[in-house]
Amino acid sequence: MNSKHAYTIAEVIRITGSSRTTIYAEIAARRLTAKKLGRRTLILADDLRTWLNGLPALKAQVG
Image (cartoon, rainbow, N blue to C red; front, side, top):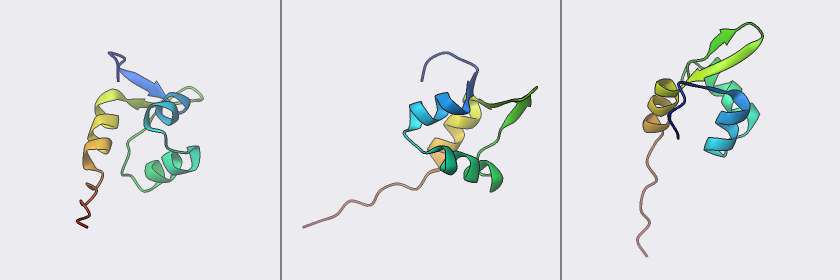
């Protein structure tokens, strides 16, 4: 992530590799905080970082 303070949904999708459906589902479930600016939905950089840091870690597979 760069030094932007907020991202559009399209930018969050590009940055995270998640789908639009997943991002809106996370917003609806209140796991990802979104803000409205007119018709635009924005994700603050700090909120995006918090959400990403809160995702479960992938368990290492031995074998």
